[in-house]
Length: 607
Ligand code: ADP
Ligand code: MG
Image 1 (cartoon, rainbow, N blue to C red):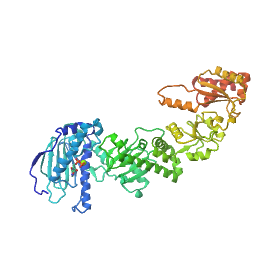
Image 2: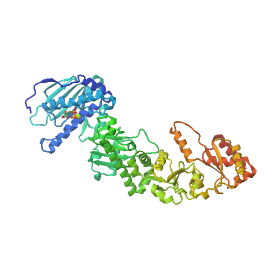
Image 3: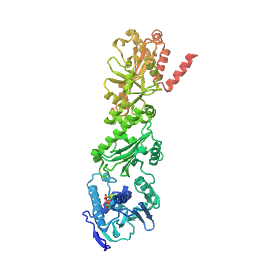
Image 4: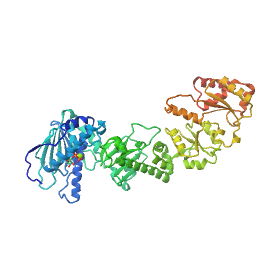
């Protein structure tokens, strides 16, 4: 090791690509701020290495203040990043800056020129020390190694491929990087701007980082602590530091794994309402406590993106393309691990505190359903804690619901029938009719519920889902053939009834049928065939190639009802109209002029 003061030396960095700096500069215009991420990461590394050497007894001096300082000199147009880490000797500068750092830059340029989509690598590629040239016309290093008798070294480079190396002026151990900010990057001389960047990337790093004298990372990273020593309030407070304007989360999972990859973090379950808010707070991805991105799309399955919090892993490759990320086995393992952890946590709450689980159901169900539909592994676990809420206010798991209702709700073909409503209020009459018959009706009015029904039907054998208004009550769950009674009327009588209604309410979409439904049922009942309605719904969401066909409504004339029988004799058109309007009302289909006419007519009749 040289202890002699350095003789001024000039050299040129061994470069094949002459134009490396212009490329670095131009190619990264949208992400210029990452120079700070790179330089401070290096300062953190240098500080970390020194504390490691100290703990091993290989450095015996005082560690002293290890704060990494960023300062701005507006007059001189410089930014200085300074650390009290292990510093470099002249030999090390030659090796690490002229060679190592450069090879990183060279690799970048190579990747950049080869990449089909340059944007892919921008921002994901850790450019290292040379990213300083994105914002600087000249960069200086003043450094003094921790090694005994080391001499301070001064390195300069103006962004061309030549550098100078001579005796430095630094008197204390560590390194200062002095950036002479380029004319078109002067925005970075603004302390407000710099503070924002520092807070974004270094809020949770292990050593203090200060802009001028203000430390930007006073809050320690909670995810690095042992869960057993933490209380609810610690997690809630930490949540506030991540998302100052967020509503308190419902619960959280502390992640900690070191094999077969390294990952720590805290995932929070936010309240997720009926719809997914695109501006929601997102998961932050860190690598060794340095913020990387909140675009975690390729790292966690889509439904997990509804969660919030921090994932910290040095094993997630960040300097590669998206398509690579998707096939990367570490990334796959990581998302598999998170999926399992999340499912286990939900399952744990479900088992240990069913009341709490039910209480929070409304806020977590969208997440669970989304997961079940899109992730097979999650589905396997979630099947056991998916809750169905019935109109009587009870919550059942699928198994419980079957146990509780199978005796009543199994049809003649041994299919278990799940009756559901997608609108408790509009379908109130249908629900009441079903309840009177001893059937339990579940509420499926969520954003994903029609998808979930399809999903569950595919998963579960001999189970059929039927919306409560998809048939008359006796046909919803057909029991035996002999119950399949049509009507005691002869064909002529049936036809006369149908044509009376057709005459009074002429609408091609209404298909009139006669049926013996019992005196307790309404005289006229409108039903919406489950199959036809689902086709219609798929159609509405573009699933049928946009082909639009109107939905036929089946109108059942209850021939066991006295008022229908009366119609046979009287052919009373007003009565027919009244009965039909009542049926339309139960389906919320009576609107506008028709509704007004109904009200006026009824008031008249009451007089
Ligand atoms: P990387 O950090 O990936 O190694 P960089 O281009 O960022 O690549 O840095 C190259 C090398 O320069 C580092 O590995 C380190 O040896 C040295 N170096 C850079 N900054 C510092 C610093 N502040 N203190 C000590 N060494 C440094
Ligand atoms: Mg680096």
